[in-house]
Length: 340
Ligand SMILES: NC(=O)c1ccc[n+]([C@@H]2O[C@H](COP(=O)([O-])OP(=O)(O)OC[C@H]3O[C@@H](n4cnc5c(N)ncnc54)[C@H](O)[C@@H]3O)[C@@H](O)[C@H]2O)c1
Ligand SMILES: [Zn+2]
Image (cartoon, rainbow, N blue to C red; front, top):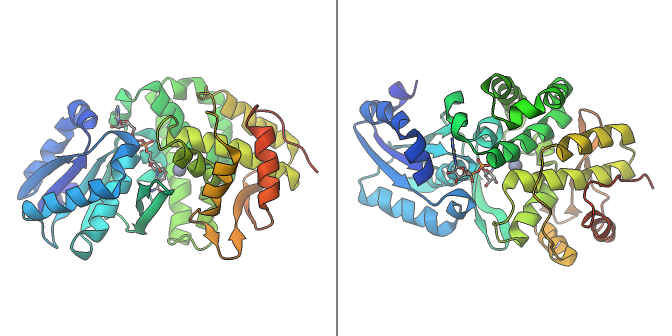
């Protein structure tokens, strides 16, 4: 499919040195299909998602003869996907792009749905746009070289999707977690496919995040604040989301989520083997959350779980409650929440 899309076009491939070293051979057919191909490397991980790297890419693309009908391929994890999609969406007011995701997180989640962005010190994904990829190609073979911590981080988003949208997938994750963490293709394939399909259904229903798609932000209000507070180091995105999910469970339980279901999710997240939660000043987190993209003039909506497989938007979560729960949460993120 990529061949036909690339025929007669100039191509830019955005990737990282690690992905290029491990899987660079996959670019061969793309190079052959396009009339010209330029590979642009960016930094590994979240460090690539800056306005400065976007500007560097635009300038390189112009210098290399990039045009309105040029094509861009994001070849890497979610960081490359978010940056490359943003670069494609703005370059000469928008060129078509494709996602060729190479991490579990990107195949199951980030490559789907057209959300693109770069970070600012003030906020994760603070500058970006919706720009749907023309194609998303999920290639299972890429996952074979992922280190365990990247598998774990990706599985956190898969757990999130399962808790919200697919309880069968949740049961499968519980049964298969050791095989998933070990990167067994027979376990990863169906889990990635199910998570990607569940997300795609929501995106089709609500492409611009005005309604039910917002449920996918479960765990991200605190998760993004943690990432920003830590300068986008120290905690992978999926790990931050896992902690965000645990925190959202506490708020959910206060609003009536069944304690047994909350405990079931806490146990599953506990089995991921997350790195410890770094110490972060609660006041800094609250300030970052107040600046969250999801914040409106009226206040911040929290995505919570109302019941197994059922997300909800809570508009009644005040700053005082957040600060109080954060004080209880930080010393022991896995402790049971309570109903009040
Ligand atoms: N746009 C969305 O809807 C959306 C959804 C979820 C997450 N995200 C974003 O995705 C980003 C996280 O993406 P990620 O978890 O894929 O991490 P990542 O893109 O930062 O990649 C992590 C590291 O793994 C390396 N890597 C990539 N593929 C590899 C492979 N096959 N084998 C070995 N190493 C490989 C990368 O080069 C990088 O060094 C965050 O910025 C997050 O905000 C976006
Ligand atoms: Zn995410």
